[in-house]
Length: 264
Image (cartoon, rainbow, N blue to C red; front, side):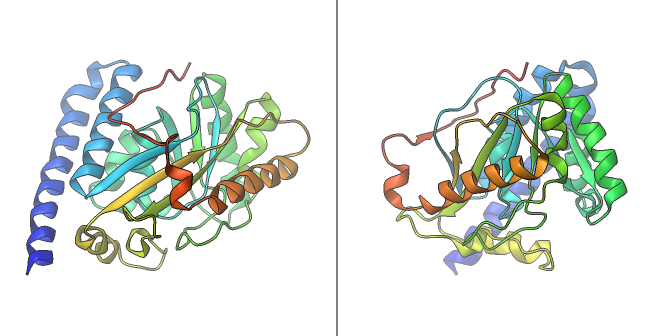
């Protein structure tokens, strides 16, 4: 009974927050500079996490400037967590564009949609990423190419690292994980590709408490080939992932209210 009531209340609040997002995009975005839009997005993402019962925690120094952000991928929650911290563009699978409401909001909030397993699509996406990095913006990619249950990090596909190699841009490895307050992995947060979105949403709403942890590595420079850079980034994320124990989120971890970093 308590779980069902919690689910209904959270779902109602989430629906209202989605409606607010639609209004902001329609009525305010056309008149705002990018820095104002990403500030609104950061605050909106942080509030969405809170309404879903998810607390955001960050471990490691948050760098200024543009980066190609390379992260493992566990859940649709990843985008809200990263969006609450970084004013970045996202590269997402093309199927996300068809999601009701969320797909439209994603498109309006600097998401680039990639058709997976297509060399031609990856080539075109690299042109888009190169342009954003060249304009001083950060871009977040999920180079595993799929989501996992959060228990491991898959090898990184190297294709989308090419713009960092071409432009000499820094790569920021980042590990994402979801824990309960005791530090145990929360399976409810994971979203596997073939799972219906509503089922994943219900699991999150029913969870008594989730902490989304972003662990940041020192930025990598981009010498050598994209394959070498992808391997280095993957090793860094895997290293952070192995630190996913309660002690890793001790004194250096901080809760971020609604930060916005300079992307120039």
